[in-house]
Length: 264
Image 1 (spheres, rainbow, N blue to C red):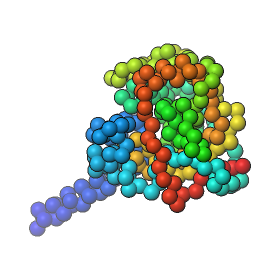
Image 2 (image 1 turned 30 degrees about the vertical axis):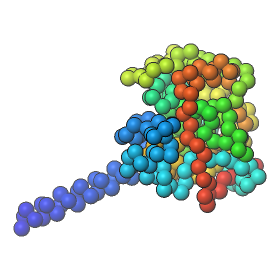
Image 3 (image 1 turned 90 degrees about the vertical axis):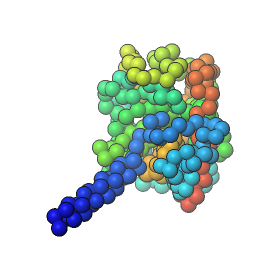
Image 4 (image 1 turned 60 degrees about the horizontal axis):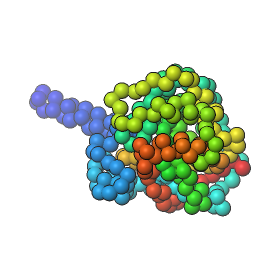
């Protein structure tokens, strides 16, 4: 009888543990390490096949709130209660990583956060896509910057900044010549302190919607904020990234029944 109760207790423990792990995966940071199986941005391991590569990627195929999207400005709902974008960005120290899918800057020191409703999300890292993943009225830009924030409960909020060809971006220039061309085993420290506010446009009009990671496993529950006004980078800066990652953007996904909102 004792052995029977022991077996039942062990089974219950395993079920609870498995459920807890499943919930944790929903809020995994969007990095190359999130998927157990190799994936790419083209060919047989490209976006249209992500759901076939790994059973954990089923949201990439069946998810109803997938990112990125084409933001059709004429269909955006105005919601004044959203208020102005609430950012508290202090200078930070970062280290650089080439994870095989993008260049990622991991925050090492400094406080930077975004507040949405009654939740505060702390900046964990930022990374880049070429071309932009989000589109505005069917237009893709040269690149896109994603600033990834999370709460203590590992809920995610991503701030998307569209990047277009223009003048040299002096803040990016602080570390752009150091971006690793090959996949790294360890992060590379950046000596200069990064002023995150200098990476953003002066006009912070934004769009907000419920979405997902844009990389496998495409987990949903991500709050997206995409700035309307793009930021400039020089052609040389864009080409330097393109030489490493010629294409690392997921195609836009169906909005389905979701709403995109703006504060004005």
